[in-house]
Structures are given as structure tokens and as C-alpha cells.
Length: 536
Image 1 (cartoon, rainbow, N blue to C red):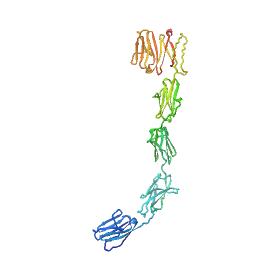
Image 2 (image 1 turned 90 degrees about the horizontal axis):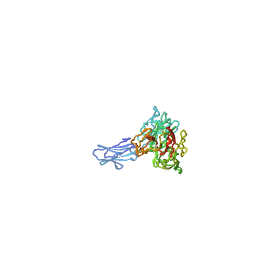
Image 3 (image 1 turned 180 degrees about the vertical axis):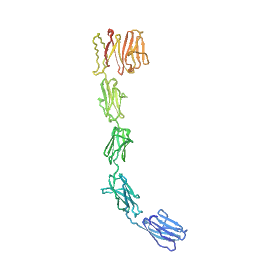
Image 4 (image 1 turned 90 degrees about the vertical axis):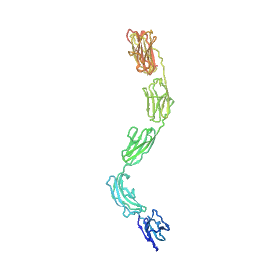
């Protein structure tokens, strides 16, 4: 039973004896009655009300002995308790006296153990005369030496020891400690520990990381401030980041910062984490897709007119320097080739065609995910009539050949053709790659036989070469021309021959020059002629 128990023993007799019981508040009150027979029917009453067993009222019978106990009585439990056995009864007055409300007694036996680095183990013992019926709390306080303010650092109802480490103090310094006991009636005096301990706090976060939301292509900035200067490491989705490229990592004393340049949509919802000695903090990077637009163009820039051979320059400006664009001509995407450059410089997008010709006319577009801009290109072509040029000269006289081109800066190739005195014709032919090529000559007799040569090697029929004879005509057909088919071809018969100079390119032009027979008969010597090709 809790507290002090007071018990009165009464045998039921014909003569009633007065009884009185006094107990302190919070104690247990017990009544015991012994009757003459163990088979008697008995009852307990308090202030006229019959009692039944509860968690605070205990009723027990052991043969002739009957017991009533009130647990943890309060002042309002005072009253008259009556025991009835058969036709006899006995009564006792219960009086509950209030206890003295005294504040607790301060702990004793305080000790401080500072053998462990950057910590202090504090112990104490409760006062021997402390009341156990009233809830009490031990309160440990500390203050930095030189300060007047004590700060609470530990509380406990039962523990009589506490360890204080460096991380629990606000700043580095020498600290004192004291302990007291507190209950609902007041506070005990303080007992100060005899020693002083030097404590150093660990790093703390003064300014935490904040989540960042940017548009695609913009820079995302993160920063954190610590309580002490130390080296830290940044991570993006668990991947460690190094300074350089798209990442700028800086530290200025206790301030750490990270800049992610030109954030990408693939990095949306990525976790940015900073870790240092004893410190870890994270934030979320959110990247919104950017809407890329072109800056409006003037009519002059949108409609280009250039002369053949001049450079074509088309340019436009996008709203974001990272934007990816595609250049198309008449709906077909363009790629970088010889003579065609695609350039990107900041917000500027540009396409340059080095030398314009008729094939470059059309509609050009620059396209991005959210916009498109259009250019109309017109190339002016000036046709120079191609007139066969004939030049006669006497042996040993100088030969001067002159032709005119459409532009002073036009590039033209020169070549020398050397023919034997019995050659009658020289034909220049230029065709596109993959076109069919036909070389033809006419004989004076249908039964005449010819031989075809290329660069001095006699040709035979194959899958790509056909040698055809139709009446007086002799024809060499190349089914699909390629760059390797270019060269000098000769159709030779007894006493005569025809020369073909074949060029397989992307430009289509042809010019035939017929030499007068007398001009080729120069006493058996070889005559050299230099021609300038005219582009038409």
C-alpha cells in the first residue's frame, strides 16, 4: 500500500464503540473488523451509501476478518464509514488532513567528468529527504564564463546524469553548469558544479538551401551559409559536381554557392545537395520549358536577291542563345556541305552559301520547336551567248585566243589540248553525275569500223558502256555517269579521229569547236591550243 496506512480493529458486539481515523492527503486509509462468525452477511457504507469495490476502494474478507481500504485519499474523502454485520453495526469517522506544500530539496553530490574531449559528464544525487509523492523534475542549466545569463540545457524526472557535448553550445567558450529540482510547489536552490569545461560547437547551417525554379536555358543559383569555414561538396542527383563547364562552384569563407548554367529540361525536379563535415542540406531544381521565338525580320532581310556567284547570307535572331534550329530549303532540311555553312553565335542563327547559282533559288525556312521564319531567295543569272570561236593562224605566227565572261572576278579554268595533225574534231562535254552520257561521230561510209579509247586505253562493252553502230553513226553510251568517267575519249578510224573532252560535274554546259581541216594539217607537227572555258 502507498503512504502511511492507519487501521482500526472492531469486533461486532452488542455494545457499539466509537472509532476515529486520521490520515494525510495522498495516503491510504484502511479499516479492519472481526466478527463472531465467518458466515455472517456484512456490508460497508460511507456517509450512508453502500460501498462497492473499485480501483480506489478495496473490499476484502478473510474468514471472520473484513477489510476496507481507501487508496490515495483526498481531502474530500473525509466522512463516516459504517460496517454492518447482520443486525449489528459499528462506525468510524475518517478525517483526511492536508499535507504541507513544500518546494523540493536541491540535489546533492554533484560531480563533473571532463576526461572526454569536447564534452562534460555531469552527475548528481536526489536529496535524501525528498518527497516521493509529488512529481519533481531535475533542471540542468549552463552559462558561458563571463556571462550573467543561465540557459536551460537538460531536464529529466528520473535521470541523475547528463552529457553535454560541443554541438549543444552556441559558440566556442568556457562553460559552467548548475542543477536544481522543480515541482508544482516551487523550485529548490541551485547547486553549481565545481569545474569549468571548454566546449567547441560543430558546424551549423545559418542559411539553408532554397529550391530554385528557372526557365530552360537560364542559370540556376543555389547558396548556403555555415557557422564555420570549411570545405563542402555539391551533388546533383547523387553525382558529385566539379567546378568547370556548366557548373560554377564558389566558396567565400562560410558562404558556399553553386551556379548551374543553361539549365536543361532533363534536370527538372533534380535534387541539389550540399555536404560538409557534419552538415547536409538539399533543395529541388525545377526547370520550365522555354518558348523559343524568332525576332521579327524586315522585308529586306526576308527577301534576298543576289547575283550568280555572290554569297547568300540568311540570318535570324532567336529569343534564347541555347535554342536549336533547323534550316530547310523548299521543305528539305539542309546539312553542312562544301560551300554551305550553318552557324550559331549567341542568339544569332546564320546560313552562308559561298557562291550562288540558279539551284539556290527557293524558299528557305529556319525552324525551332515553337516558331518558324521564312526567306525568299532569288538568284539573278546573266546568260552570255555561246558563239563558236574560230581562229586561223599561219605557222610560226602567234596565236591569241580571246573570250569574255559575265563578271570580272569569275573563276575560269585553263587547259591545253594537244592533237595530232590528222585529227578533225575536238568536242568538249560536261554533264551531271548519274546522267546518261552519249558520244557520237558520223563516218563517210556506213561500213566503216571505229575503235573507242579513253585516256589512251581501248574500251570494250560492259554493263555501263554500250558501243552502238547505226548506219554511218557510231555512238558510245555511258549509262550512268560518274566523276571517274571524266577524261579524253577518242573515236578512231583509218585515217581520221574525233576527240571528246568529257567532264562529269554538277554544272551542265557544253561547247563544240570545229577545227577547219586545213588548220590541222601543219606539216606533220603537233599544234597546241589553249582554251578558256566560258560558263553559260
